[in-house]
Amino acid sequence: MCGIFGLITNQNVNIGKVALDGISRLEYRGYDSCGIVSQSNGKLEIKKDSGKIREIQEKLHLEKLTGKIALAHTRWATHGPPNKINSHPHTDCTGDIAVIHNGIIENFMELKKDLVSKGHEFKSETDTEIIPHLIEDNIKAGMNFRDAVIQTLKRCRGAYGIATCYAKNPEYIIIGRKESPIIVGIEEGKTSYCASDIPALLPYTKNCYIMGDDELAILKPGEVEFYDISNSVKLIEKQPQLIKWDVDAAEKGGYEHFMLKEIFEEPKAMKKTLKIAPKNLKKFATLLNSAENVYITAAGTSFYASLAGKFIISRFLGKYIQAIECSEFQTQLNNSLEDDAVIIAVSQSGETVDTIEAIRWAKENHSNIKILSITNIVGSSITRYSDHTLITQAGPEIGVAATKTYCTQVLTLALIGLEIAKMRKQIPDQDIDKYYKALKETPNVIEEFLNKNVENIKRIVDNLEKNANYFFLARGISIATAKEGGLKLKEVACRFIEGYSAAHAKHGPISLVREGFPIIFIAPPDETYERLIGNVMEFKARGGQIISLVVSDDETIAELSDITIKIPQPATKYYNLFSPLTFIPALQLLAYYAAIKNGLDPDKPLNLAKTVTVH
Ligand code: F6R
Image (cartoon, rainbow, N blue to C red; front, side, top):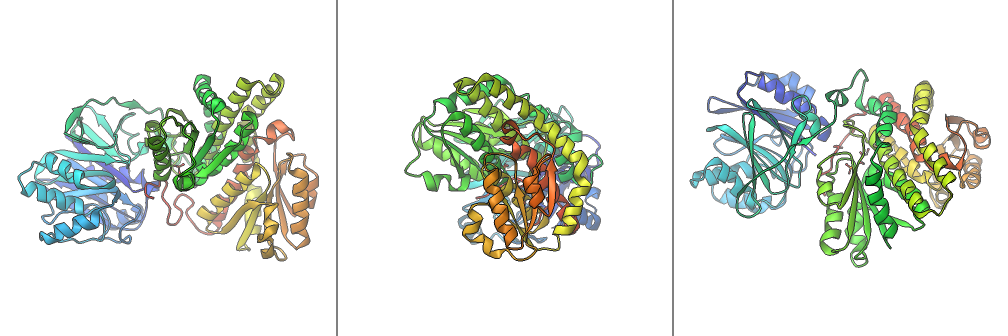
């Protein structure tokens, strides 16, 4: 949450424009206000306001800022509403020190009281503003800029990724990290950059230094020094990581929105993910196979991917996997987590604070616990707390609503399931081959569906949008699809949609159904199909408008439905197990076109940000 971008250069560049491009590439991290500070001739100049970056740019002409240093920020409000005063950068009393920050300083009230008693004047309601004032105090006490920042960070509890500059010090900028991500990219001898996420650095370099907790970096033009500040201050060596993403992957490439582009990228992302090295899958399979107790934890879309994945893995593992939302993990398992459990943590960003906290708590309190993580981001925080990590190959996902990363997560979990099946030899080899064949075909099924169904989905959206609420109902593994489809519609189209168990819906929710109330049934022809027919009938009998998602040669549920969406896949048990992959694009497209119809920006849903780094 919140995007940070900064640079220091000795080149003649349009620094305002570079800073503006940098935060524009991070706007998915927060978009309620933004600001840039530039430094030249011993002075800071700040332009900031509330609103989306484009609106602020049109009003304030951010690209006109000049100098050799700039720090830029795009905000997702935590402390204080999204207005001009609360937007970053924040400064000290002298106006010489500027700070941009992502995270929350938990002890800011106590620090603020102390600073106010010393005469500091605060302008904003943010927690961030205490940082420049603390630095100011330390400089007044005789410290140099670097030490003043270090001593400041040592007093701050909570999470931060910060960047700071000081008008009287044109030689370097400083960045620091604890829990909130920040990375560094260098154009040797020329320019040094920092950013909270990879897409902002892609136009400049593919070699990124990933900062760890309690690390600080001094950025000079084209060079960087890293320090460990956890105890005494120690200079440390860090190696850059090669990022394999293309800069084009973080551009819209002719699509109107990233969300649509990323849905259409699903087949390609899945084909790349299918190439995850078998030796890495084997590490997961071996640990899961020997574990007595297995848990899977995640948030949001990653949690629904986990629900689908645990269903597939449990099938082959012969053991039930407990899925627990990451924010509930510690509370629910406080007295019962087994010392030798294996936990799978799934997170696109690898930075979701509740997911990180769940595994960190488990690891700190249970010495033999093994953590297996699945993430899309190399070097992200989750990888540091994990015994083994698999990286999904979705490439950058810029749309705030997760789409292609969901598919690559489910696919990765399915690959782990099949690796376990091979290892356990409980089902015939020919069957395992058929499951593999079906899984490898899923990207083609999706491709065919996407190529042929856009107009169909738009028509359905036109029909549906007359109604305010509806249900997505399913049984078995498809409950995960119903929940994820419902989440997509809620977040991007702002409609209240409930993804629910079709069987359970008659224990209450069915009372909402009136003549014409739309219910979307997710109905692959698996072992739940016959019972689902019964559920369709129950809702039909009460006047519900039945929309069904079925395979191409479905006849029964299709016949009972008012509207049918057909997924071009064979009706075999091998494909059915992977239907969370092949059925989800229909619901993602539905959400996308519903957002467009409602005049909403599907890339920037209200009140959301892509990476949730607060509890
Ligand atoms: C929904 C969405 C969120 C994320 C959730 C977890 O479209 O994107 O629900 O899935 O915030 O994020 P990660 O996967 O980064 O841990």
